[in-house]
Length: 221
Image 1 (spheres, rainbow, N blue to C red):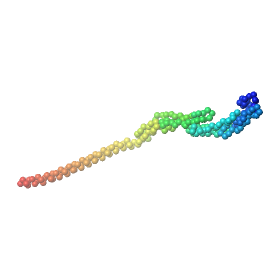
Image 2: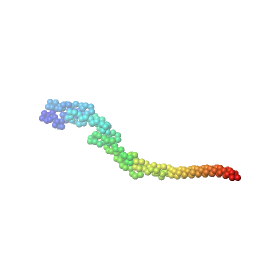
Image 3: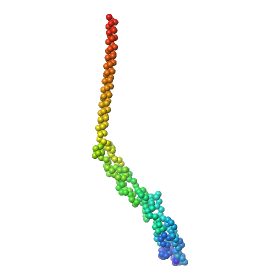
Image 4: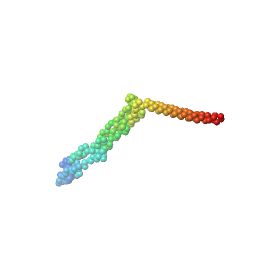
């Protein structure tokens, strides 16, 4: 029972028998005739210390939209424990994670220097010269010469070098030579054809002129 000369709030801190145990709440406070009456906490609520609360504490909700999931379910004597979803890290944490954010992604040309955890973000860094990446690991540019090839396009921080077989270095001149030879042969054939045609035309003209000259001589006789 309560001391009528003291408030029930003060007596909660001075007399254990006036407080409710874990997982319970005050249903009715004590007075000078009766002791404190307690009642069990309803579902999704809890109390984790002897208390004089008239309402149990509400269990935290691990909201996926905040990047959270349940690590430990709520009980009548403990609150829900939340943790970040895979690929997320906590950005608002006091005694329990309240909100999480997705780990940063490294950009092409960078690599993951430090993988993100549930408490820290990913740490990115630039790839060194002579290498490239898609945002995860740096790779050295392909050395075309060491493969017996030639470099047709230099590598950048985001792309690899492009190589080509050395055969292409003499293939193009060979094609040009063949084209030139074909042109010369074609020109020679055309020139010879024209010469033959001119020769035939010349012979036909000479043949026509000789009879006419003969006929002129007979006429004069």
